Amino acid sequence: MTEDAAQHPDRFASAGDRSAALVEALPDDTFAQVCGRGELVLELRTTPGAALWRGSPWGSGWVGGGDATALGTLVASAVPHELTVPASLGLPAGYLYDWGWGWHAITTAPPQQPGEHLTEWLPDGDRELADLVERAFPDAETPPGDPRVAGWFGARADGRLVAAAASLTLGLAPSQQRGPVAGNPAGTVGPVGGAALLSSLTVDPAARRSGWARALTAWFVRERFARGAAVVGLGTYLSNEPARALYDRLGFVEVPYIGGTAA
Ligand SMILES: CC(C)(COP(=O)(O)OP(=O)(O)OC[C@H]1O[C@@H](n2cnc3c(N)ncnc32)[C@H](O)[C@@H]1OP(=O)(O)O)[C@@H](O)C(=O)NCCC(=O)NCCS
Image (cartoon, rainbow, N blue to C red):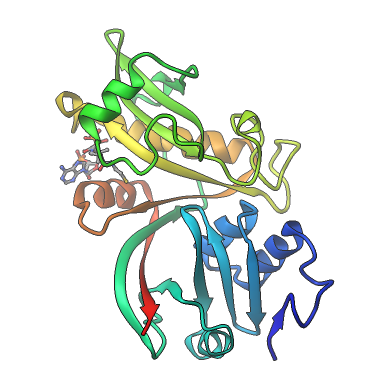
């Protein structure tokens, strides 16, 4: 029994309906929670125990989650060309492995870190930001100017910007993103809560291993939870051992994802 927009035209009439349905379908899947609470879901199919959706923080591809057998049923009926799933499920038959990345999410605030009080939202067009990212993280997923970024935050030492990171837009206009997060327009901690995404965390090479990344990440998680987020997440390349160690130490849970193309 597959429920989708075609069979139930009124069930997923709006983006809000799709998002709420995904949040309900996979309560323990933090990637699904971010996609749903961030109102990023373009299409959705559900069946008891699994969901298959199109639309994630990084693009419009199809993502699956839940129980492997139930998900296999959904995939067999939808046959998405490209599919990403938790590595623990494995790609369904007929898909060839093409890519992998790490998903990291946290649902409770980490302990207070030294230097958090030095972190703040950066003004739009901060004069040092583009130079820092270009020098220190030329492969950043969302460099300054990327339209998905709602705002940058960072910290200065001796007047110089030494660390910065981006908050990604999740379903709201960028102008709203420094305040309330998606799903909770009042900006208070409510029963449902929104989601937030950290991106392009960059520390000046000369200032590394001094706790700046730890301070910025903890500040962002605390700030977003205070604004109503229920979950904060981010993605890493599996080869980025320093970043994976950093998030692990702060209490993020890592879920490796794999993706592939229908053969
Ligand atoms: C990853 C990065 C942000 C870490 O910044 P940082 O300020 O040096 O990190 P911190 O000093 O806060 O380190 C916190 C913890 O992260 C881990 N860590 C950081 N750098 C590490 C490294 N090179 N090797 C292993 N672990 C590392 C450690 O657990 C560290 O705690 P410890 O110093 O007590 O052992 C920085 O190396 C960087 O800008 N890299 C390039 C951009 C990048 O990869 N960004 C992450 C994108 S997801």
